[in-house]
Image (cartoon, rainbow, N blue to C red; front, side, top):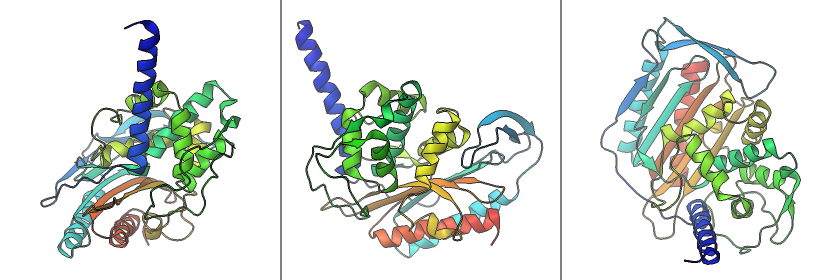
Length: 338
């Protein structure tokens, strides 16, 4: 193959890969795998597996990690909380409100975590907007003018209808600053903004974000059942610790995530006024016999922020959002009281 043809072929492959990512966000079909019983794991709960974290101050939503010192105490509340969530999930499945529920919890104050079916794969859908956000912010660290550059969406005026509809969408053909598109992608979960951003994003930059954080890249493989709740939680843990992006960029990402319009999942389970920096994803394809709804983020419980991710499959979005709400309420009560 001559060099010019080789370059054309490489560009076509890159465009195809970006197209697959857009499809994962907008069009991908639903996969289904029924769970039998409840599989659990607990980490960081034995003596020596917790510790003291030294963190940099001065930020509202991030707590940049400076140092870690192992401690010799046991957190007794987390195993008890895990058992309560297991019971809730079993009751939810018996009542038919969900076919499958996976949970990942991490105490961000001192590190212990537990999982329930935390290695079950799900279709991420709009959850993939967080790594896209992180890829752009990483590029902006070395290219300060990037966020002010204009981009426009040139796709269809009508995109596939979402079960959870945004309050507003960008206008086709109208240029927007990349910074505004990123905000719309996260706050409103605007798929037009996402399409414009993914189309313009360098393939290598997006690939680097996934691989650097150890998360599978939407590429040649199927777009169904791509990610686990434990793997996806990595994005939020790294934003909180500011260990991939700078503290300022991590803070900006979490500020947008804390203003997400979706309030029927994690947010509904905590008292009014408690900050939750989170992202939801939903998949309900035409003709599919199951729906997926996920919500993952950081709950800023006073003095004890924690990470909670819940991924679900079932028949009705309302029942699934209620399941996520109930788990969120149970965790908040167990960790923060009230």
